[in-house]
Amino acid sequence: EAQVTQNPRYLITVTGKKLTVTCSQNMNHEYMSWYRQDPGLGLRQIYYSMNVEVTDKGDVPEGYKVSRKEKRNFPLILESPSPNQTSLYFCASSSSPYGYTFGSGTRLTVV
Amino acid sequence: QKEVEQNSGPLSVPEGAIASLNCTYSDRGSQSFFWYRQYSGKSPELIMFIYSNGDKEDGRFTAQLNKASQYVSLLIRDSQPSDSATYLCAVNGAAAGNKLTFGGGTRVLVKP
Image (cartoon, rainbow over the protein chains, first blue to last red):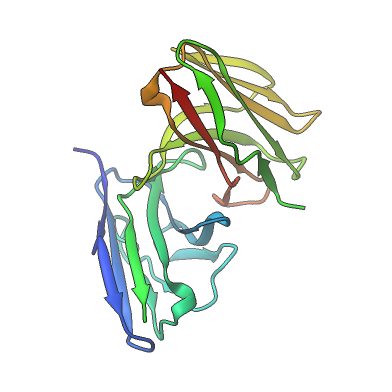
């Protein structure tokens, strides 16, 4: 089944403890992206990648890192999480600069 | 000014009626336009995309694009209770890459 898989689905962590949210797609898509979704603010792009080793900042990249070492994987790294990064995170992929297929989401709480 | 604007709703429509959703965007060079449906607690699901001025129909959904007015709309015909969801408009801007910008979404409630 063609899909974008994120893990974990739910995560509660403490301020400052480094974490990684994994994202993997099995559709051989070139484009991958991370979004966060917050009430009243909608979906905002954090980072995106056009291909292996090619990444660029979205609208809200501060406090996040990404890497694209393999085409299928695009992990999101929070080096020192803070409470304002509590959010619902979505990974997405696309075969072209067109519509994305989204993963199921990761609900992160930073206390 | 937000890059992509939608009325947050809720838009309440009776079952069987037409739901009309609107979206405006600020980047005049935008190339492609998308409508996503998001049920509560779920991920966004692509339902329509449109690149050229005019109408595009897919089943009960029709997307309309007017680049001169920087306006894109979605019509849902014969609305069903299962159409109750938040509908997100997304725009792929003129800049390189795949920076898809979303509007805040319109919540639609279809009442039996």
